[in-house]
Length: 298
Image 1 (spheres, rainbow, N blue to C red):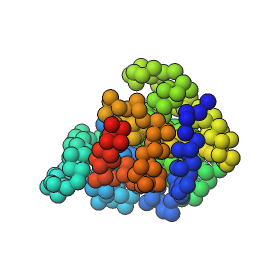
Image 2 (cartoon, rainbow, N blue to C red; image 1 turned 180 degrees about the horizontal axis):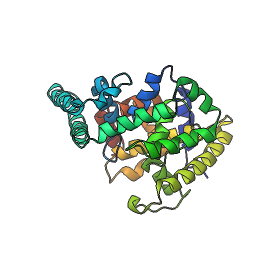
Image 3 (cartoon, helix red, strand yellow; image 1 turned 60 degrees about the vertical axis):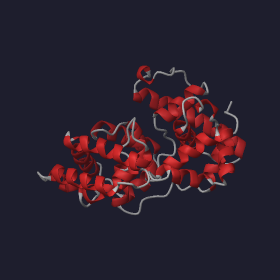
């Protein structure tokens, strides 16, 4: 059985669905990958988007090959320090400062340069082009193979980031990232049983298969409810909205957040789902979203 109101939440996400838009250039394909590489257990999507914009002069597709330059890391660190001066007294300063600190360490440890170097090699080796992305849309097996290959050959890009990269390219309709959002949702609603301690969860490759299978089944049930096709990717989008909001709520009230309550919140705010998405992805808006959610559930 589906969680109450889950089909309705999926339906809201489909009203202005734009996650299947294809890239128009290699730059956009690359940018989709770069938007994922900063994600981590303590890094929100809004922070990842912000730091990608900050570092665009160094990590855009045209500029990324400069990572081979001896002074690349020094220049990036200087750029990040300048950004610290710019963000003073701006909205979201705390979140901005936190991701700047994380990124500075990644640069100093050469982790970021290694990821970019590996990514460039991966694009060349696999001949990543706009045409290839269109071809992959019709080949789920090759799409999954590319996800596995990226997770094995790009430093700091595991299965979750690889799937999210291809989401940003408008494909991977049948795949689901084995991230905490999805696994926790499936665990909470008894689709899988992994317990609540993420340190004891099965390996990513095993969770990946389970998550894809379960979300495909859930998408099928939602499709019956809505009388329209629904992909696993579209079903997981609703999970992403739900679990992201749940993560912004104080621990005492977190249990109150469910699909029905999230829909109530959207109605209370007079928001469409895209208004929520914009707030989630904007480092200067997500703090207000956190405040509004907690106030709503008081």
